[in-house]
Length: 356
Image (cartoon, rainbow, N blue to C red; front, side, top):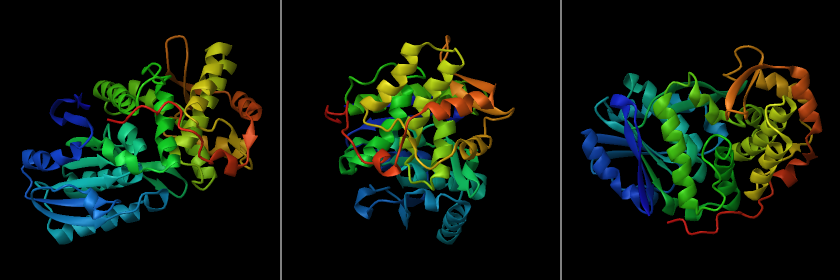
């Protein structure tokens, strides 16, 4: 199965190709851009990178939060200079979500912007990081605090890459798929993995097409992310992004219930969906509410006090000025588990159907 999903934003429009072997389209994409040379930044073995059809510089990268910083962006841009890359050339990322973010930001900043093509190789990157043009790196004080909007020229989600992923990395991506249940994708639990990817990308493409710069509707893509990002930072990134978002999704359901935005059945549905995918739903032990609230106040959406994307009668929306005492109470009512038990890979429910 191959799908072509358009992201429609005027002259910055592009397609997301999903399916087995779609990475072989890279040379055609590069040819369409008119690039004479390409810098490929890859966190994967050289044989994973398809032929670009032009002179190519292959730069190694590492997935993971430790390299998601401005120093890595600067180092990449310095390599682009040495290679003689111009704004008529192109950059390609090949790796997971952190590589996609770092390479995307480097492409946005180098010569004030060069075309970038993403080859996401993890489930998390395919369903989320590679689509939509948000690029960012971390500061010691918080996650994704420095970034830019830079839409890719194309995204090639080759599902063959996913066959190599360890179970925990698959769960990492399922965290983003689970939260789609509450922001308009519907129930994806009965679908095969490729269909889940396509449904998640279709949802995000529609939202990005309507709100490229995150001024309104696009906020809902951050469902579960406010607490999720805080948990990542507070735990020194022991939790993977999708794991933290899954916990944040359960919290978002409880918080919406505490604010009388949704009823008990919908609150319970948050935990049911998250646990169906084999994801954690409890808070890690040893992380206090005060620390989490301090980190959540730094969230980019928190313009006035604490802000969360929450479910409600009209669907998910950004809610400002959520009372701190309510947040503290909800955090206190959530179960806690040792971090080792939270991150122990469990069954991959809902993904038994073939990828392609």
